[in-house]
Length: 264
Image 1 (cartoon, rainbow, N blue to C red):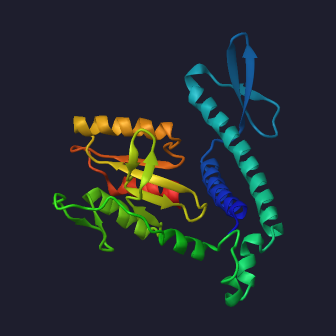
Image 2 (image 1 turned 90 degrees about the vertical axis):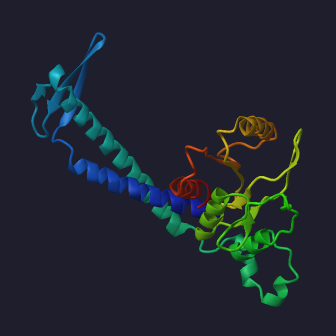
Image 3 (image 1 turned 180 degrees about the horizontal axis):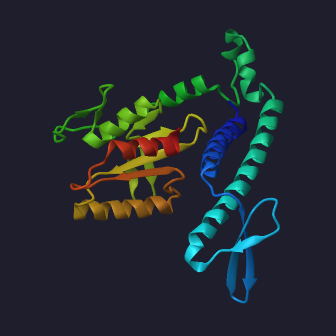
């Protein structure tokens, strides 16, 4: 799917959730509205009733009532804007072309596809090629005594890395374990995972820092982190970071939420 249309659908689903949530909140909102008058540096609030010209003063001790009415007005405005935006998106989705240039390769016979260097690969072929990249990882030596394995049988360096790898597989997120990365002043390093968002085709390096209670490890992490920033790797943009210590191990919930936030 074209990136723009995918983003529209993502926004559409977000707005539908917002509208549903706001509608539910408004069902519990108080009746009437709120009028606000300013006198000097002070504000005075009044409770209004639809269809009536009179309004009742809300005393300071009943300020929660004024706040509830103001919140209701905010929800109504947000709901109106969300519904208007959703209507525009629905219109654009209907008028958006069913096919875009990215799908041109799909209109060619299989034999002809072999002769073409496409400017955009369909998702299936793109991710097959991405996953099939060849590289030299960090590897293991005889001194690496601990053996941790993913559900696919791939060897990793810790239980937490196995949890991350298994979660990526469960959500069908492609990854390359310990893919080499050259960083100025550090040389060749091997971040734990190179991953990609299938929907946006945006890549990240995922670094898990598992010994934050170890001073030597922490100092090494601080140096590595600063060097990565200097080489244009930023958390949340193209770098994902997770942490744990002896007292605070990495939880499955944190891994799941991280994957959903950046990679789905």
